[in-house]
Length: 133
Image (tube, rainbow, N blue to C red; front, side):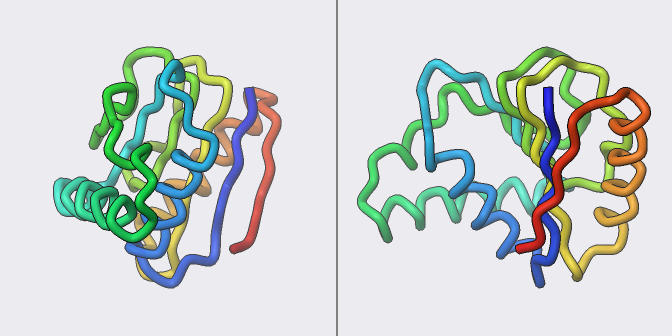
């Protein structure tokens, strides 16, 4: 299990765009993926950007979402991947091969929650990586 923190996004939209690219870059239909977003507004924007990515790239993968769970709260089951752009997750107890956390310069609540999540995962001796985007 490992966690990668992506930071440096100017806006939540740019973080969502990058998140979508991360999910669909090596997309496999057999993997279970959970995307935890801050609120219904981000869920709507995610769905809009997903369709936009399809029309921009013509990659049919962007239309497939059967194995992707969109949530606004902590996952309550195991997933192969968990992607987090939320201020509600400060600890995580479910098993996952990979956790990806996205922070933005425009949302201090998300940044604060990600710091707490980082500290929590470090205490659990999870392998942590940080990438400035």
